Every structure is written in C-alpha cells, then in structure tokens.
Amino acid sequence: MTVLTSRERLLRTFEGKEIDRIPTFDIIHNIDLIEYLTDEKVTPKNAEDLLCIAASKILDLIRHFAVPNYFDTKIVKDEDGFVYKYEWWSGHIIERPKFDSTQDIARMIEKDISKILKCTEKKEICDIAHLHVNLFQEKFKTFEEVKVEYKRISNKLNGTIMLAPEGTAGIQIPQERYDYKWWVYFYNDFPEMAITYLDALVDYEIAFIDSFADFEMCPIAMSSGPIGTNEGLLYSADFFREVVIPRKKKTINKWRSYGIHHISFLDGYKWPVIGDFIGLGTEAICPFEPYAHMEVKKFREIYPEIVICQPIDCTQLLPFGSEEEIKQAVIKAIEDADKRKIIIGSTSEIHPKVNFRNALIMYETAKNYKL
Picture 1 (spheres, rainbow, N blue to C red):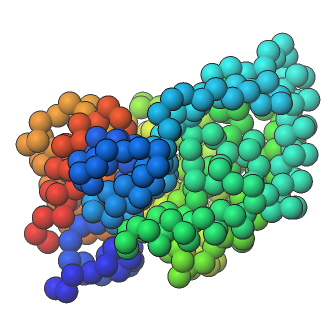
Picture 2 (cartoon, rainbow, N blue to C red; picture 1 turned 180 degrees about the vertical axis):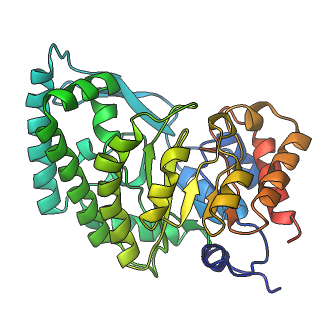
Picture 3 (cartoon, rainbow, N blue to C red; picture 1 turned 120 degrees about the vertical axis):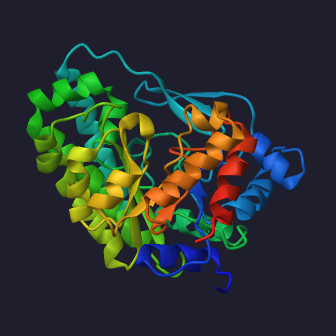
C-alpha cells in the first residue's frame, strides 16, 4: 500500500485499519544512539536539533522530550526542603524534609493543596504537581508556554508525533513526594485530606488538558502511573477501584472529549485492573514487561481491540541481548498481537545503558516486518 505518514500510521493503528508497517514509539535517552543516527557529536548547542533528527529517523511517536544539552549533575533544593538530583535525561528526589509524624505530613500537604489550587486558577505550571523526571512541561511557567513550545518542537520533528505532555496527576505524586511508606500512613490517619489532595491534583491536570488539547496539533495523549511491582499490585484492587480509577476516569474522559486518542502507561503487574482502565475509555495499554508477567498473546486474546504498546524489555534484553534475540522478541510480540494494533518500543526508554545497536535492530525489525 501507499507509504503512510507517522500520523496516518498511528491513527490507523488506533482505528484498526490497514497500515503499511508497524509503528514505533519510545523515549530517546541515549547519546550514542543520537550521535550514530546523525553522525555528529552532541553538544549543548546542537543537542535539540540532533535529537529531533534522530527521532524523525526511527520513531513514529516520541515521549519525554528530554534534550541532552548539559552533561553534569544538578542538585536543587526547594523551599520545603526537598532535594532533587537532575541529569539531562531524568531526575529524582534524593532527600526529603525530616518527618516525625503524619501530622508533619499533613501540614506540608495542606500547603501543597493551596499551591496546587492557586496554580490551577492561574493556569500556571505547578512544580509539586509533577514528578521532576524531565517531563516536558516541567521547564515552563504557564500552560500557554507549554503549548507554544510543544508546537515549536513538533515542527522540527519532520513528521514524528510527540505525545501530549504526560499526565501524572493522582496517587503517583504523593507517593513519590512523601515516600510510599509515609503516604500510606498519612492516608490511613487523614483520609479526607488525602482525598482533597488527590482531587486538587486531578483538577490541575484537567485545567491543563483544557488549555492544551487540540487534535490537529496533537492527536495522542498518555497518562502514567505505577500500578504494581513485578509480582503484584501496589494497592488492593478495591483501593484502585475506589480511589485511583475514578480520578483517572476524569482525565481520560477529558482527553477523549477533544477526540484525542489515549494511552494508559501502567507500570508493573497490572492484570487485576487492566479491564477497569479499558472500561474508562483508554484505547492502548503499555508497557508489556515480561518480568511483570505482561504477556502480549494473553492480552490480545482477552482484549482484541486494544492497542499494545512498548513490549520489548529494556532492563536486560536491550542492554545485554544479542541482535538475534532482539529480532525474535520483536517478531514474537507482533505475531502474538495478531499483527495488528501494536506499536513497538522499549518497556520504558532507550536509557544510557541500552546498547544503541540493539535499539536500532528493534526498530528495523518492526519496520521491515511484512504484514
């Protein structure tokens, strides 16, 4: 058939229509891969241009547009005493204020809620409503600035589609900001305040979606969150259904109200609640981590019309596997998905430890597979 654009290929994949080849989707956090694809050395000055060129050569869809424009480590301490470590491709909390009791947490969360509500009202980016892992929107002050920058970058990607700035609002924020243990204790002691906090985060995300959503500009969005460990859920299925999923429904419905296709990135073991997320209207699930028992074949048998994304392991296979192992993993995923409604990519990202040649084999195998 006629060669499709990335946009056409992705939309037809979601719609279950005939496509020319399997689409590709990933995060590029690997300088070796960028330099190989562009045949240039990455510098802070050319990093954005080279990332755009590299992405346009191998991906139909890109997530987390983090630019390698610095190579040192940044340590930042905020006004509340949280200390963050940033590298160009990621970031995380390395130190939290000393909490002696859930009352200490409650006082801090009361401040958080106030700040989130103010940012929502003013349509400003709220630093405590994000994960500080180099998601696209963290770099800006207002919702409008995010949209302007998204358009600018999209125009440099030569047809590759960039996901809408990723929604992480909900339970992922407090369990990361306050540590899973403290968050659980706090929720037990102050359930009403915990719910108010979660609702403020959801309202913030909905306000952002209303500001950003435009199908012609960006046809695909994603919401993410940790669901389980490798062996089980982080919370009970009942807790997910009573607390987490109803709030996700609001954000998924908001994206869908603009006609934008939606992907749910559900980290870890998720079998007990996958059906609940699909019931909300999400059209695609990812990732399919083999170490978390996420079998593509089993999923396709149960959910024949849901798009499968990111089934190729980036923890062991892509860093250490042979080229033949990569090829066979890609072919198996495509065939287990019945050669339809699947988007090939790593289970998280092409991180710095991934063998860039293995990443190339993954994309090439997907693109060359005869449908």
